[in-house]
Length: 395
Image (cartoon, rainbow, N blue to C red; front, side, top):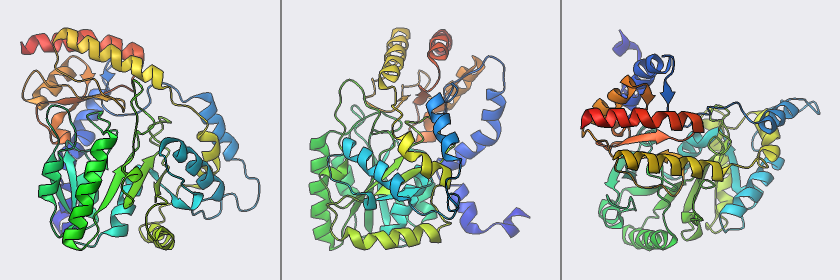
């Protein structure tokens, strides 16, 4: 019966790798495992502590109407755009203007908007593996073709040779995620410059511009004094996607943006097209309260020092046990090698010890697993003996 009522397109989307595996996990394994008393949940970047008072107060204050238009239809509100542009200029060394920022319902929508803005059906989108698990389904939903390339296995850097080999006359976008989820790698400026040169040459050769879509929801979460650089700084044909859900630890309050760098030729002509597309794909603007709150939300700092301590605790603790892992330069994830080559089996073994993680299969990287550091320090400390017990059982 389902085959008669659901379109073939939707069925194909539900089978997109690794989205199909994740859907099953969400629907069955995760709710059952999470409900067990005493379980330590290190799967997703969800908050584990109550929201800060200043966050709650910003939403509360912004829910009080100040005029008759307070809850009227919203596109991208001027005050919210100005606050976002000012903040973005502090992170990315470009003179972004408020009109360069197009507010969206989170990072998902910003990515979908960017792809649909510059791509035609059948165009190819190149991205690196391991990827964020939603890339393929977002690419396919836009009628595009995902083309996957490996990263450097030792450093997790972009494999520029593999990217160059993957580009064809149908390539329209190279999707870059820095700082990277799940590896935590922050791509250095020299590497981004070499990528820009490669894409300029490919654009000339194919007589069609190749764009970068830069997925940057973690660009404020970097450690050890690491310098973050956006591809937009060295490649004008970059569309920058951002989500506030990471730094505010509030992924359920959906707000983000798509930013067009001031160096992109003819960017003014993109503005009405972006707004029209946001309406066409389902009125993809953030709700009124979040837009009114954004100038206040931008003032709430992310405690980078706390998350660096969490990273250091877990990296040292896991290495002492015997796990093989690198120390990430950004994000709030760890991506260790599984002591059992079957990462799904090891994920299940950890679950038996009441520690929940995401196996590498969800990131198309068998033999690894991801840990989220958004859990409390107490939860992370409590997890280490359980990681040790599971490691010992594998041998």
